[in-house]
Every structure is written in C-alpha cells, then in structure tokens.
Image 1 (spheres, rainbow, N blue to C red):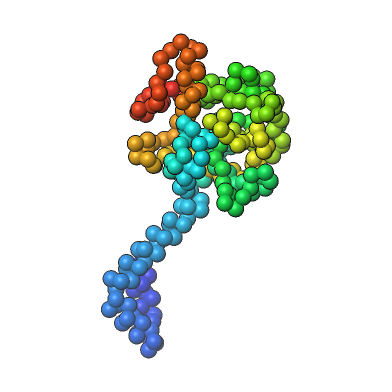
Image 2 (cartoon, rainbow, N blue to C red):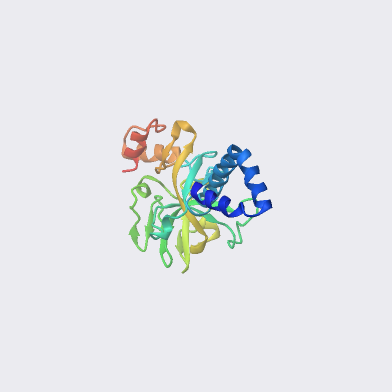
Length: 239
C-alpha cells in the first residue's frame, strides 16, 4: 500500500495543489495511517456482518434449555452457500412474509428445523416426532426432547418451498405448529456458538427443558441431573 502512496505522491508533485496536498499528508502522516487502519477494520467488520457471521441475542424462552433468554450467539451466514439445511439445524430466519408473526419489532426468529419441503410430520402422544412415518431420531436430541400437540393438532404437512421449525421448549413456543412454514429464502444462517454468558460459552448443544429431562429420567428410572454444569455432561446428554 505504501508503494501506491509513493507513486501517487510522485504524480501529484507536478501540480501546485498536489504538492500542497502531499505536504499536508506528510505532516499528519500518523493520523492518516491510523485513519486507514480504522477504515479498513470497519469495512472488514461490515463484510463479516453481511456475509459471514452475525451476533444475535435470544429474546425468549422458546429454545430452552438449549438457548436461554438473554444468551448471545453467533450465527454462521455462509454455511448454507456450501450445503443444504439439515434436519436438526438451529436456524435464524426472517419473519417477513410469515403473516401471523411478522412484526418490525421482531424481524427474526430462531428455531430448530424439524421438517423439509413436502414432509408429513406427526407429534405422537408420548411427545416424539415422526417424519414421513418414521421416528425422527437424528440428531439424537429428538429422542431426548418431548414435543406437544397444538390445540389438538398432531399432523402437519410441510408445503413445498418451506421448512417447519419447532422450538426446543415445545410447551412454551410459538412455532410452525401454529403459524406454518418458513420460506426457504427466509433462512439467514445456522446458530453455532454462544459467547455470552461466559459461564456457558461454547458451541451450541441441544439440551431439553428441565421439566422434560425430569420426566424422561423418571420414566427411565435414572437419576436426574438438574442442570449441565459443564460441557462434558452437556455433550454426554446429546449423544
């Protein structure tokens, strides 16, 4: 970059105003070097925010205990340029075009993908999801969590061009059971890393709500862990 500036200064010295400009910049060289560094950093930050990663704050309890209200996360915005959306992905999507939930105050939602375009979904009485007649068991989180009907509705057909997305905290989540599908083009990226609070910093892992963990443990006759004190236990629960 310095070589470019030297060449530019050499060309400008043939003009009176050019010599004045070069003299001015030379006297304030440190200021302009710092300005260039800040300007470059700003441009890189804008590019990263627009195309690579973006930070979000979790606004509600609909994804507990995977994500808690107030958690701050990073979303990978370029991953779906290289692969398709997978069942089980936690995605951030625009609510624009979803009439029943769109609001300028809440332009984005975050949920877990449970259905692809054309899928038939059924929420069984025991709380497990069946996709096209088969138990949804990948990732294993779907076997650990429990889902509820929505005002008696157990069966859902995913329209073409849409995803169905449920909240992990099914008993307290406004999701596709209520307002229908998420247009494919609305998906912005995949949530993958929590950076706040520091006590739970790390890659995002599926953790069912505490009441669900209690119920599942009681039915299995196993001891209940009221919380996941560390990443190792959280990882173990998600295998």
